[in-house]
Amino acid sequence: MESIVEVIARALLAFAIMMIITRILGKQTIAQMTYHDFVAAITLGALTANLAFNNMAKISHMLVTLLTFGGIAYLLMILSLKNRKMRKWFSGQPTVVIQEGRILEDNMRKQKLSLDTLNQELRERNIFNIEEVQYAVLELNGEISVLRKPQFLPVTRGDLKLKMGKRQIFPIELIMDGQIIQSNLRQHSLTIEWLLSQVGKKGLSVEEVNYAVISSNGQIYFDPYEDRMSNPIDKE
Image 1 (cartoon, rainbow, N blue to C red):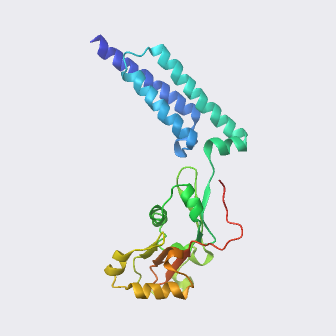
Image 2: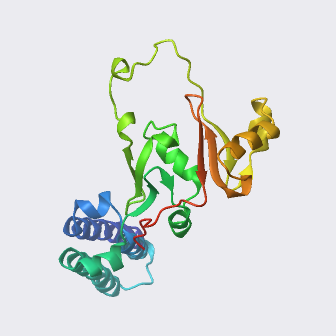
Image 3: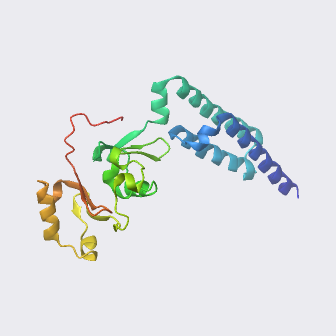
């Protein structure tokens, strides 16, 4: 019975301490978790679990450890707020993955971001055609912020002079990472010869194409590996 009471007391104490530490660190830490926030959260979670359930660990030692790590997390947060260089080091910084409609493959590789993930993030923002994107930025919390091209900003159908009965299709990916997606070609009765002719019209070869897709409006979007930009944005 005494062991059960001890476990309950430990659990209540652990919960109370974590609530206090969380309140001290503030809402931003919860809403927008950065590198050091993630490390602190994992560490504090493990220590809290030990405090609650590990009867072999002394409560006093666990309390000191918890408060120490909580203090470190708070100190790093204060340093990040006061010093931009420290903030970049501890929290990281946003990374541009699409610039002026061009996918920046080097930045995506640095952030371990695949084209599939990028497309998923865009679809979650109701963007099914990648050519609509002027800029896309991978934020510190892993979310992607998107700026549409001016002609694709939200307006009425009348402003865009769209025909109400015009049929739209789901985007068909043709090339990804320089490789032809043959299953998509077969599924939509498209031939490799047709695709090669479309690539050739752009003065490219398949190996030079990072990404190609038939957009929902029926147009083909190509993104070559060579972005032909004199100053691509790289915030690493």
